[in-house]
Structures are given as C-alpha cells and as structure tokens.
Length: 314
Image (cartoon, rainbow, N blue to C red):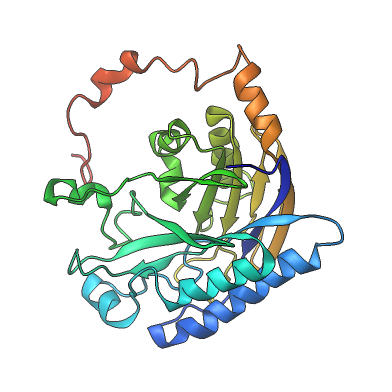
C-alpha cells in the first residue's frame, strides 16, 4: 500500500452533555460529524487534514452502576448505523476517523459491555479496538483480556495498515500501562491514537500533569507519533468529574507539536504527521532505538505467572 509521506492530524475534544438513552446517539453523532467538517474544511487552506481523532465517552459514558443497565439503556452493537455515518463522512472528506468510544454490546458475549472505538476511512469501516484496561473500580466494562479463557480470539491490540500509515489505538487508562502501547508498537504502529477521558486532577497542568507526561513518554518509548484526544467536558456535563482537555499531538521524540489550552471546552488542534521521518528514524538510529534495543528475554520472569487482581492488595 502506498503511504502519504506527510499529512496533518486533528485531535478533537468535546464538551457535550452525557446521553442517558441510546435514542440520543443520532444527534450526538451529528454534532461530531460537524466537528469533522470543521477540522477538514476549516483548516484546508493551511493543512491537509487526513486523520481526525475523538475522545473517550464522546458518545456516552458508563453513567449507570451495572452492565445490565448500560445494556438496557446505552449499549449498541458495532459496527452499526452510526459507524456507517462516520464512514460516509470519511469518504466525503477523504479522511480517516478514529471515533470516540461507544458502549458496545455483542451477542457473542451476552451480559458484557465493551468500551470500544472504531476506525473508518474513505473506503469504509476498518476495525475496532476494545479497551483492555477498564478504569477499575469506576468502569463496569468487560475487558477482552478477561475473556481469553472463555474463547475470546480477536487481537487485543490490533494495528491497521492504511495509506496514512500503520495506526494503533488504545483508550485512556490503557496508556498508563507501558506494555499496552508497546504491544501496538511491536505490531508495527507508527501513529498511536489515544482516545481518552482523563479527569482532573490528572490533566495537563502541574503538579499532576499525567496527561502530558504519559503522552510524551509513550511517544519516546515507542518512537512513534501520538495523537491524543481528551474529553473536555465541564463538571455540569459529565459528573462526577470535570475534564481538563489539553488534547495534543506529539512527535516520535516527545516534542509537543500542538496542544489545546487546558480546561473545559470543545477544541481542535492540528499538527503534521511525517511518516517518512518516523520510518527513516526507526531505520537509521543506532542510539535511543528503544524498539530495536528491547531485551525481551530479560523480562520474561516478570510475567511468568498472572499478576492481575481486580481488588486492592492487602
């Protein structure tokens, strides 16, 4: 597949009321599609925007306490008619869209809710990513990891080959685990997409600017671009938290290329993705080449037995 040498990405953050019923989803998708137009058409005199990324909970948050309630009121199968609308917009604007997350139901996994983002392009639906690390204990989503023993056989960390490079997405809390993002990089991802809903105080301002710190660190660790769209909703729109925004784009050396001012509000930031540069650096570098210098055998004992515990340790 022929890749573009250089294009622009847009990280779009939202500040919208949280839907309580799935009947609100068509209108919500319409609002987000208008942001795609703003990003692609509005910036067209200056930038060739070919990638648009939305935040976690852009469609709905897990506002109910149980999976049964989410399945009854908000969860939807994927792909669906909403994803079809994104695909039509992607074709119209010749752009790739990493959707904000949906609460997903799947008849293969009755009683479970996944937190899922979809990738679409000019040729239609490409694939989806389900959050592997729900934010315990607040999120009641299922993790694909926890279903492996029950026969779950889809890739946990899929990477998609596109004309704008090899794209890999992960969601919010996933990014606090270096292994999750490293899995995407080792699968070939060159542009890492963070679909996120970081809440205060872990935002883009000291002394707890985890958002900025983690995005820059994962870019350096994996010699990859990071396009990170964060939720920018006010406390009134998405209680019980306020959401600091600060959506950003980072290059493979950890340089912040663009960042929205911290604080609530719908915002769009745009910056270049230079595929030729990241591919050349991965090929050329003999120093600070963390992917090539990874001594996997040295760490096998770390994961020789399961560690995961959903409850706090004593």
